[in-house]
Every structure is written in C-alpha cells, then in structure tokens.
Length: 336
Ligand SMILES: NC(=O)c1ccc[n+]([C@@H]2O[C@H](COP(=O)([O-])OP(=O)(O)OC[C@H]3O[C@@H](n4cnc5c(N)ncnc54)[C@H](OP(=O)(O)O)[C@@H]3O)[C@@H](O)[C@H]2O)c1
Image (cartoon, rainbow, N blue to C red; front, side):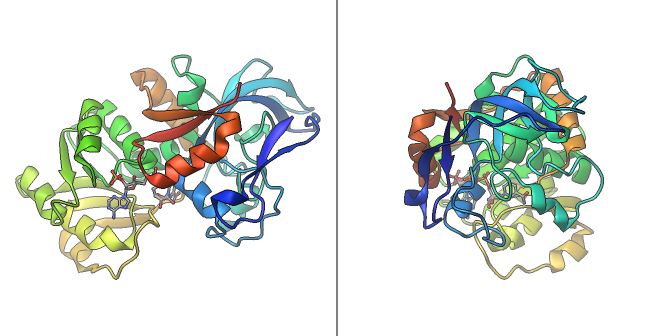
C-alpha cells in the first residue's frame, strides 16, 4: 500500500512517498480503509522538527486527522465493527478524564503512524463513529481542529446560547469554533488578515469580522461591537503575541482557551485579575469530548468548512497550500 513518510524533517521537501505491506489484524486494533485525511498547523511543525521532543523516525506516517471505513477488526475489539465509518481521537489512549503527559506516547502522526496512508491499523479504543450527513472529506477535519474548538467552547468555556465568542484568524480551529458556536446559538466575532476571508466566514455565519491588519486595535473593536461587554469565550489560536489583546477583548468572567503557537510575545496578564477571567491551556481533547462533539455535529447537521481537497499523490501540494495560509477552515486530502 501507499503511504507518505515524514523523512528527515527538514521542511516540506522531506515528505516522501513509500510503499509498505498491508497492516495485519492485531489484538485491540481495527484496520481502516482511509477515505480522507486533513492537515493541521502542527503537521507543518512536525515536518520541520519544530514539534515536541523531535525523536520521530524518518519512516513515521504523518497526520493526526482522517476518516475511513473499518474493514477488519482484531481479537477483543468491541467498540467498532466492520463497515463502520470512523474517526480517531488524536491521542489514542486519552479515552476520558484528565490530561497526563504520557498520552503523547500514542499521538497519531507524531509518536504513532498517522492517516497519510491507504490503510491504517488503529487502536480501536480511540475510534468513534461519524454522523451520516458528513462526507469523508468533512469528517476528516474533526479530530484535532474540531475537538480543540469543542474543548475550548464546551468543557472549558461552558458555552451558552447568547454568549459572544471571539475566534482569532480563519484557520482550522477558529472556523470549527465559529461553526460550533453558531450552532449553539452564540454570537461570533472573528478576525483575519484578509477582507476576502472575512467575507467567506460571514457567509458561514460569523456576525462580525475584524481585519487585524487594518485594525491593529482589534481588541477595542471587539469591545465596541459588544457595547463594552467583550467576548465571553476567546479561542486564542495565535499565542502569547496576541494574548494581551485577547484578555482586553474578553468579558468579565470570560474564558480564554489558549492553543496557539503562531506568534510569541510578553503578555500583560493583570487584566485577568481585573476581569475575574480564566485563562486555560488546552490540549486538543479526550475521546469523550470527541464523541460529545460528534453528537452535537450530527444533531445540528454541521457541515465543516473544507477549503480545498487534494489528491493523495499530491500530499506535498496540500502541505504547501496550508503553509501559504491561503485557506480558511480545513485543507483535506482524498484517498481514492
Ligand atoms: N493545543 C492544541 O491542542 C492545539 C490544537 C490544534 C491547533 N493548535 C495550534 O493552534 C494554532 C492554529 O492551528 P490551525 O491548525 O487552526 O492553523 P491554520 O489552519 O494553519 O490557521 C492559521 C491561521 O491563523 C491566523 N493567524 C496567523 N497569525 C495570526 C495573528 N497574528 N493574528 C490573528 N490570526 C493569525 C491566520 O488567519 P488569517 O489568514 O485569517 O489571518 C492563519 O491562516 C496553531 O498554533 C496550532 O499549532 C493547538
């Protein structure tokens, strides 16, 4: 079967095509015929040796996110059956409960082989069934970006209808946040470097768009748009470089879920005290959150924003497109 490998991890040129034997059915694992996979910002970091402990073999198959059909199951597998349409939680062993660092030991596309393959042998405990209304390409976007946005909004953010949610940029996590928040009855403000992208996210339901290039004081613009109240929940997808403004833009008792490593700075944190606001670091989520999110996506019939779909053989082009940041939402690869 065909796979992609991360190679020497010196940047995009390291990605290499390879073939390897079909996976064998083993205890506790399901074999998945992969139908689609999706890219995340961290896949760019992994391929450039800028993510985690950087002890991955050159033969590691990348990508934490994908969707496919179960075609075989090993002994002891009861969670899924042949024919099920599934996605996997990014941390295969984080089924529920609190985060512990040891979970990095089974991280798809990083410490275990990921979804850039025709067939994947996946620990069955990590799998969850996908709602019928989602195409393979749409379902492939869920595991990292979708669950991260869900974790910020729901378990961490305690989102209620009528809340104001602020999402930074129009990448995968932010646009998932927009779609989940709108489905829950929130008002959503989103920022972007591009007016064209803002027009597109407005078509997806965003109530207010702010161009952070032409409006560098975007935090003040958020306060103006909310008559001084600020955002109840902030998806801080950029990093410590924007954190001071995110705190300024937050409401009293607001929740700021921090995930981003795109821009570093020296944030001023006293606003958290003045606002009785909560800043939390978010590490994707557990399988319980994935299952809860899938229920909500199914009930609200959310169609995730897929920007562009590439062919499996064009995987390097998909990486280059993500790196160009021309996308809104998700960059996806179809595995025919
Ligand atoms: N901790 C976790 O569990 C977790 C999980 C998922 C992702 N992440 C992190 O979250 C971040 C976003 O990931 P992603 O996959 O959604 O990325 P992505 O799809 O590549 O999106 C990146 C977008 O961020 C926006 N952006 C960049 N710099 C910005 C700035 N200074 N101010 C406002 N927006 C800015 C840009 O939007 P515009 O083009 O619209 O300006 C850009 O397109 C990354 O750092 C990623 O590593 C962390």
